[in-house]
Length: 38
Image (cartoon, rainbow, N blue to C red):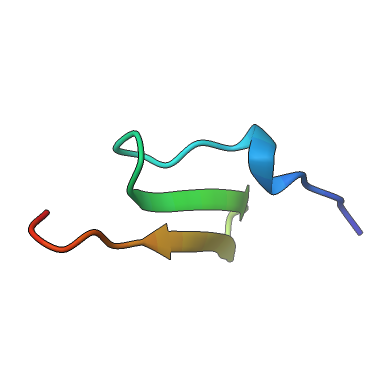
């Protein structure tokens, strides 16, 4: 098991977009934040 602090990761486009928590060869875990108009 791998522990990840979400605050240590950044969104791809600054304050929005995907934020990958874990990336591997077969699976990616993350959060997506969508802002209206972007």
